[in-house]
Amino acid sequence: MNVDDLEELADKHREEYAAVKTEIRVCTAASCQSSGALPVLEALTTGCDASDHAGCCVKQVGCMGLCSAGPLVAIAAKDAPLDQAQIYRDVAATDAPEILTSAKTGTPMERLHCPTEMPFFARQQRIVLENSGIVDPNSFKGYVALGGYHAMVHALTEMTPAEVIAEVTTSGLRGRGGGGYPTGLKWSTVAKMPATQKYVICNADEGDPGAFMDRAILESDPHRVLEGMAMAAYAIGANKGFVYIRAEYPLAVERLKTAIRKAKRAGFIGHHICETEFNFDIEIRLGAGAFVCGEETALMASIEGGRGQPRPRPPYPAESGLWGHPTLINNVETYANIAPIVREGGDWFAGIGTERSKGTKVFALAGAICNTGLIEVPMGTPLRDIIEAIGGGIPGGKAFKAVQTGGPSGGCIPEAHLDIPVDYDSLKTLGTIMGSGGMIVMDETSSMVEVARFFMEFCMSESCGKCIPCRAGTAQMHGLLDRIVKGEAGRQDLALLEELCEVVQATSLCGLGQTAPNPVLSTLRYFRAEYEQRLLEQAA
Image 1 (cartoon, helix red, strand yellow):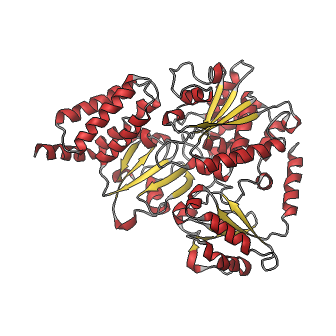
Image 2 (tube, helix red, strand yellow):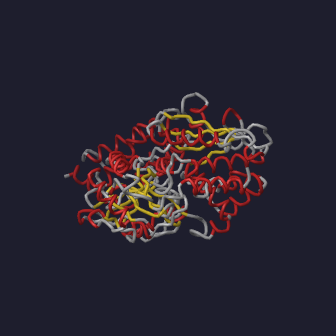
Image 3 (spheres, helix red, strand yellow):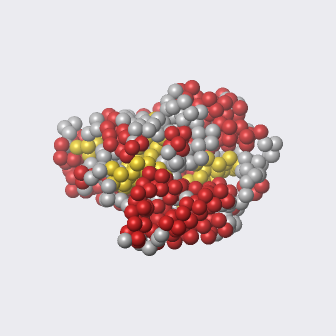
């Protein structure tokens, strides 16, 4: 199959649905399902009678972003982008007749109207999420009709593996899993390995509290991730891939399985893909929910059937990874960026963002913020824009206090630094990290000492126990934080806590332990007075 064949396939799908002029899209991602999206879908599907609603069709789609307003329904021209849709919020099954009338007459339904002109939608730049809320995640042909798999077919039939890597390198894409390692450099390192057996892994073991970017991408546009993995495999010379995903994401797993099955049936996964010599198969491996399995060596141990524990590096996975073979590991969002990079060119992608942080980033907004949900913005967007404009600010008239980025491995940013551009390097100067994209917003009622204790408890519970600094250190730090919160600690305890932070950070085996002190250090850096106050209470 070449690009012309693929376009012919897309045309057939368009002809099949040529009578459809208006789509009534129902978000059926997990967030909206939890708010009652499935009864809404059923009511709309039942009520959309062909004779009364000619030219209309009801279809399920993935995440539209504004999860706090779910269930969301959008009425739009066929395959039109989300910003051209009429979006309705907080929809109930009983609203179906009015929505169907709105779709039929074109008259907006003001009662449930969710304006797409609001900053939440207008300030975003959707690259990874460009199909989310538009494509049916279970429809292979629907994905192809939106341009899906065109980049892969182009890469396999018209580009050499080196040219694919060069395009990714030019784009400046950095791994979206947290470390920010240059993707092109990682790919070229694995490609240079002389081994005949290599692997590609998609890390979908999203474990940060408040983070749901990867889940939403897989629930909304699974073929995009498979397409990125296939191009990565072609570029480095791998013939086998694994998606490592936690079993707590049943909807994402189900849609991923469907996507793999349909891609195999279409010949886009398997042997002699696009009538070339390229063979590539993908399997799903379910994780049991251990946070440490997000660390790449622990993840590989779990795939191999062993206990999910990290191992010392070097050797790095690029040299000796899965079963001792060179292995490329990227996360969901990184692979979801590959198709547009190959399609539009590395220079196009590099033109978005900042000098050292290219492209866009998907964030999950959670906590004390009006617009909870999924957003995608260019790298370098000021944090204040994300919190106050896109996020809608703090509910209930309360004041902003801090935002936690990077999950348990990150840190808290106070109001004084809200104007900082969000990119890898700027966040690092504040003592935090980008992480995979979770943002937990806290208002003035939050106790930062208790926040530090919460994250330390998480790290203590999730420690695999292999190395002593992490196993014993996180438990000791949690005990000290607990005493400080209860007003039972003295100054010597605070000094010991700071000393332990340094030791655990410097001597732990893997990233979990090395970064576990970060929330403590950042809250001490910006909110030390709250710690001091707790000590003063003890003295009084």
